[in-house]
Length: 260
Image: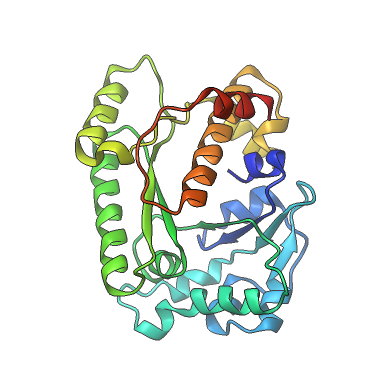
């Protein structure tokens, strides 16, 4: 997603909440003196200034660096103060500037539903659920959707489900098509009309720490187009400020994604 944002000129901050730090490793920000661990301990201006660094991908992508130590904060049953620290950090970040410098903030969450993911749901205004077309993954996205609804009811009335995007899809797989239809039966119009294809180029680009848009293989171009369409839809929904509903991509939206 950050690759599509970079290509479209959407100034983006990626916040790496996953203790595995895959987003940080791939985006290769400049070395920082602080990390998400420090920010969640103390969401101060000093920690934010030290934790946020530009990505080596190019101008327009900044990273709030992840840390393996963040796992120490991933309490299964956090108190309200802990849950609101990321939201407090984003509020502090906004107050640091006359005009907020980012058009998009991406919160990269771990796969568990502990404090780190719940903190993201408290801080966010939209939640994009990512799943794969397998039996166990479908059950997992159901639990994630329930978590979104719970946080919306208890801690963040502004939170809305942006949609469900299916990752690593093989179009010729009958099992994958069956699971996608199962998702549509469960989530209806929240299932994104664009899926992310399973292509080796994704792992290759990640291994080289490069944007998928710059990898240059046919598989990479296919994935890049899917991300362009997905980002266009996210921007369209965010501009409208309404609950995500299914729509087919119009001609202008498709052409804009192809051109990017």
